[in-house]
Length: 161
Ligand code: ADP
Image 1: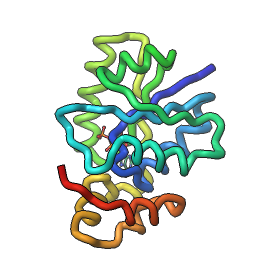
Image 2: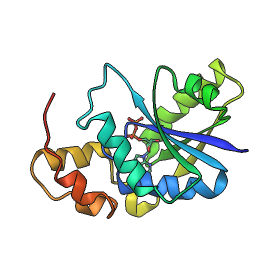
Image 3: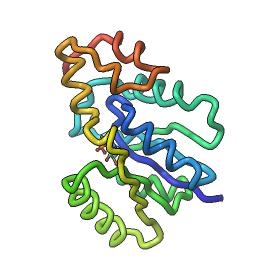
Image 4: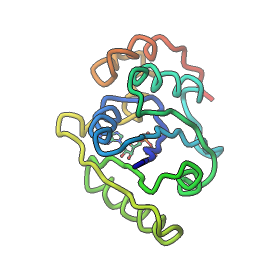
């Protein structure tokens, strides 16, 4: 079984993530959407909410699992028996950053390869950071959110930590 992990903060999940996930799905038998919990990186939304939204979008997709993890992503991949990591690329900035992480991961664990999918041009300007900024300023983020969860995300009270 070909298993891949798509790690991220998904704070919140955007159409950019959904595009990458939908295109990764046919490539693998099992795709684990993995929310990394990092004590130094404060999120706007709780882990439970971020997991719920991913689960809502993919509830009928039997090859998708939503999980959370702490620690190194490659350790989580090992635990899941996943030899592949999926990441999305929006720009050369993403590329430079992701290349370093992918090479670092390879030097720590040779058995895991990172597979990059390049964003569709129509989604390449979308980021969770922009969506958070819009939400924190009471703007309308629905154009950047999946229809199944847009209302839920828009109506979630924001408690700044
Ligand atoms: P992280 O905090 O690890 O960057 P994110 O949740 O922001 O996690 O992103 C997870 C992955 O999704 C990353 O590989 C990121 O490049 C990718 N991604 C996010 N937004 C987009 C987008 N609009 N198009 C393509 N890939 C994207």
